[in-house]
Image 1 (cartoon, rainbow, N blue to C red):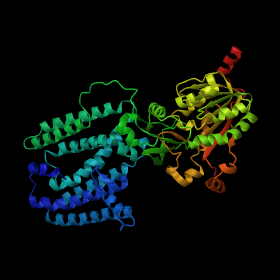
Image 2: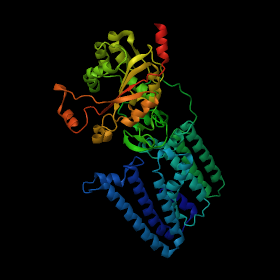
Image 3: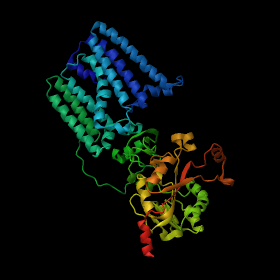
Image 4: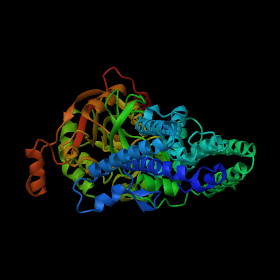
Length: 548
């Protein structure tokens, strides 16, 4: 509304008629703002002023802030319609019908904004901008120029479309954390560099605005050039269209982020390029639906196989850098739970293993490896943690190695048992790693896999507050069906699901007993035992025989 005086100065509407038209238009515009804030859960307008939703949430007298916000928007709509009818008696119904049509299209834009991420394309985004933003602006503009015949009108349509794109660059982290379409998100889903594509688009729009502005006569040209200059200044303020000296990337610079950091934290620290899009890692399909949200990241469920995964997610190389900075804590209660279950797992593996060679992938504190050695296994281990390596090197020497599973082949020949306890959920490409593991296993070899269970009692009770729902550390959230499908696709035969017995003695607390009584277990873990088929071929097995 602050722009209206600029335009009124050159369009020159009749002051009395303008005031009569402005009141209903402003009320309708405000109603749309309130509905948009309610749908998108905005608590601050442009990060500065509290919205009506925020005020009602803080009000102790309001029992249902969402309902009251929606009712307020409806009341404003009806008040506006009454004023429209009253004003039309003095002028004509033509401008009122244009206001209503602009409002109808803006509401369609609000609906279009809820379209699933898999349907976001540049064409979709352009239509969304026209409906939700340009038509929304037309509600106010109709009070000033009811016939839409001012020479300034085509310029202003392009100007407000560009203004929204600039807002998208500024509010990218917020939009991404809320699952709202954003210009950067649209381009990041394509093959080109998103920031380069955004700069190209905004630069092209500024050139178009310049052409439209210089084609105008005075005084419209002066106002158009002022708005063009403001757009250029905003683009420069956002770091766009300015010459930048290439700076060498500092690999030694700390991220200063944590496993509990939000999507907004990563974008503010590292920029939009810190995120990447992903298709379902189990079946490869890019059709999915929203599942839940944690730390600003969206968890989506694949519409084909039902697997739950993070999308968009932080890049895998950033996750590895973060893991290096936040090295393992050997007092971690999760590692203590591994110690408590190590003996049962060793008995299970000893029963099914066709031979003694055991590889623990992601050995952490090394509890399983120590216990497996007592059960006469020939133990080897891989982990990405330098602290784990330093801690266990005196015990295992050259039989442990620090590797990145996504980039490295597995050493030491072929194995009879492979263990991947809480590893797969951290991987961007679990199928690639599982295939590599299978190639390093003998015929009839046994694979034990454990991951957090997205269908566990823990998730049913705590939802996205369950501590396993950490989209920075965990990219994947398996169910029994999706993990079985992944294992079979990678060449394994699933033997059965493993359910660990309850803890006994002092290790069993009251809450553990409660989860058991309710039908769950202490960990919310999904553990599977699988086998390499007897007729499978392992190139590493042949190398091992030749070496012997």
